Amino acid sequence: MKTQLIAAVAAAALAVAAGPATAKDKMTLQLKWVTQAQFAGYYVAKDKGFYDEVGLDVEIKPGGPDIAPPQVIAGGGADVIVDWMPSALASREKGVPLVNIAQPFKRSGMMLTCLKESGITSPEDFRGKTLGVWFFGNEYPFLSWMAHLNIPTDGGPDGVTVLKQGFNVDPLLQKQAECISTMTYNEYWQVIDAGISPDDLVVFKYEDQGVATLEDGLYVLEDRLSDPAFVDMMARFVKASMKGWDYAREHPEEAAGIVLDNDATGAQTEKHQVRMMGEINKLTEGSDGTLDPADYERTVDVLLGGGSDPVITRRPEGAWSHVVTDKAKAM
Image (cartoon, rainbow, N blue to C red):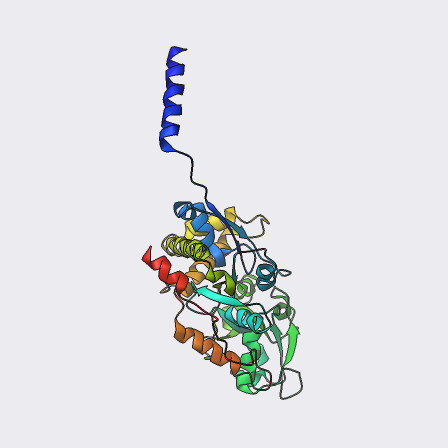
């Protein structure tokens, strides 16, 4: 009993010496889509304690087909969101003042995947065909590309018929469309897994077509950047997140496992997530989180080049800032 009493007194003394535990800053990240390796850097940062190291308690909210990140942040449901720049700039023009504070993805993974039997060998062959397109903000890069090609999107022999594509590859498998929207890291492999050989497909990557736009950037509401405490919190968040992305590139299989551990739906498979992680790493490689203004200008030029139906109607002002990444790199 005497020994236990001494130990208890010693523990109490140590606790007093250490002082009160420092409370972490709570913040919420809204993802663009469901839990998958596309967002591995954030899940890795949380799992490996990188957010803890910088005093953050980060809640990661998965997205989904009925969740629009700009609406979530405008409604106060998140401090920062992951979004594609076409969607973010379109939202900004419509009154949601989003600002890009970091750009972990350096390259685009978007492409059109077509059945070779359709006879399509070049974008000019799209005319008269049916193409599957995602909406909810994901349609902007496609619409801009068609405008650059001067191909109408309202059907007819000289235009394309746009099929509003669900978030699966059924329109291609069921031959409802000659081409569908796919990502290099996701839906393309779903087509392959469905039994279609790569030799029976033709793919058009937006990067190769010169119409790639920035994907998976981090956005906040503009007025919050006037608060130094918020900027400091975002700088710590970006610093820890990029550490998570670096770790994911160095340990892709472990990162995929962490993603699977956080998939509450149980819908993801190890094979698909490990493969996705490898493809995602190609898109994040070379980024330290800082937005390259040249990439931003290219994206804006693509979006403004939408002919009579541009995604945005004027060149945005104040749509990006280095204030967070500059502070993160100085930490």
